[in-house]
Length: 490
Image (tube, rainbow, N blue to C red; front, top):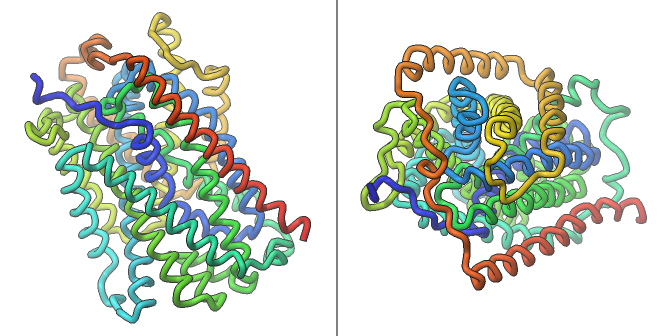
């Protein structure tokens, strides 16, 4: 039935915006950057290593998404490459993790918005941050209910607003940078290895969600080209944004305030205030973070997991009510509403650190299942058309799985227990519900539908757009690395 089909309306710009929006937000502006208070200027090393262990998974997901460009991402890959038990695990871990990112982002918005209001003379500190967060979720539920096209346009607006405000803030603050602050860290030595690995996990969390565009593959135009390109661009842009903001925080905040930064819910705003930067610096920064960075994360934090829920319901892994597509807006509206309910429950905890730990563990599990699915697809579907091929993909899967398992050894214990409980509940749900449903897997052509090839003019335009994005990303990445050399020659 036509009314039960998602529409392919997202292009490269929207795919990148969705991905960047999911990744650049709560991690960078809360838990990720607060680690500067523990490792100082060494943060760039942690951030660079996090980039390195994220590139290969991005390319692997690029290959799978180009070959199977539907809604549901890792769930779909695991369903065909492994089995439904693994698929359900991937689906639920992804849903919880990305909803957790959005929930944490709403709490981060509340913190920065409260500081912004205080900077202009309005005290709203008496309002529970969870109330502001829930109200914000309600707004984005409506936006995502009304259609992916509107959501995609809003996402692009949020991202470009964030970049514009960020550039203005960089230019405004660069005369206040103290290069001598890069000369060391605020302690005689780095933290113990176990603590450093925990810190690294929170920094790596600033990269999680890199495959958001894959989850909306069923609504992406020419996904065989768009998705691999969006993934390759996004991971480097995420590094650039993280590195630039971290450079400014290190260069603006004296070492004696690092303890405060390490424990702050809004480390950038609190760090600036402690360093004596009030008024315009705080206002401009909070506007960029709250209305650009935060809003751009909340939006895909609803859209992406809703597509997983929709796909799982279509496969009878969840009640069929969540597979309904709105006849007018062409959105999985019931799945969107379920994401809202999960958001409200996570927001009620009021803890960004706990939400962050749960999110990074669940996404690491999801990505490991994705790597296993990649190898399973190679074996089970050797003739599957693969418009893009990841270099040394199988080796990349083994390396990624080993690294992620090692990283999880040092994650928050309570969050690990939470992830373990979630995994057990997934198996129980599968045993009592899913396995009794029809387990027939539809043919790829039936599930994905027709994936059109662009015309010669459309392909030429896509190539031009990609070239602009590629060179822009190369330049920004080079700048974000190069500025760390400035203190060495000063």
